[in-house]
Amino acid sequence: MLGRLLGLLLASIPMHMMRVAGAELPGTQVSEAITLIENAKQNRDAGYFYRAEAQYRRALEIVEQTSGARSPDLTPALNGLAELYFGARRYTEAEALARRSAAVVEDGLGAGHPLLATALHDLAAIYHAQGQYAKAEPLYYRAVAIRETALGPNHPFVAATLANLAALEKAQGDYDRAAEHYAQAVRIREEAFGTDDPRVAEARADYSAALRRAGHNRRADTAMGRSASVPIGASIAQTETAQ
Image 1: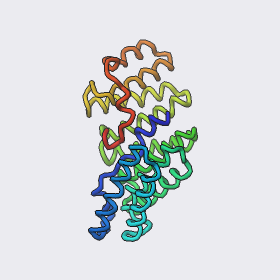
Image 2: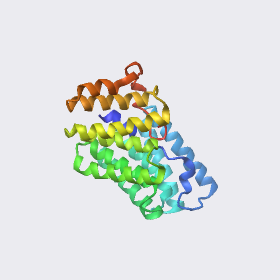
Image 3: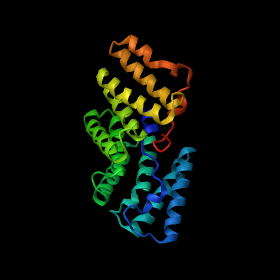
Image 4: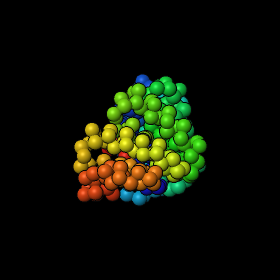
């Protein structure tokens, strides 16, 4: 569960979003912060935790000094650091960072901004990984609603949150509702990536498993379709940006 959630957690925000609030960061500081965040992500992916942590924190410090402690420009560093702590199962620290990210985005960009949906999705996944389903579920629903409005109902980011929501419902034994949300994720990903994509295969496998747990064995067999011949492991490490 942790690996699959981590694969969907905390989209890497494009670096041009460093000025999402309209703050004009000095060019040298922007360049340094971007480089630090990019290097931190590489080090995180390579397993160099402490090196990545130091780079994310330095980037955060630079942006705080130039844009202020409440600026949405902080979100790339906040989200990256939260992802790092999530992967290390340091959930308390990850939660605090995700909450801060959500707060600065909502205050600076509004309650309907897609970056807020990312922060809510992230926070929900942190609760989800700890089994705090009552806290996670409404955040997933809110993230889905924002993404459907801001990005369109067929955007892959919508599918990412639906898949996490379905996994939560499956964990609670609500297999019919989980199957419904997995089916939506399958449809969106098929339209976005084609039927042979590993991300579609993974969603179909999850959909089939939920149907089977709900007692719909024939539908489960049909749901797998051609996904049985597509390797599904490749999709687990994808970030939302890659989806």
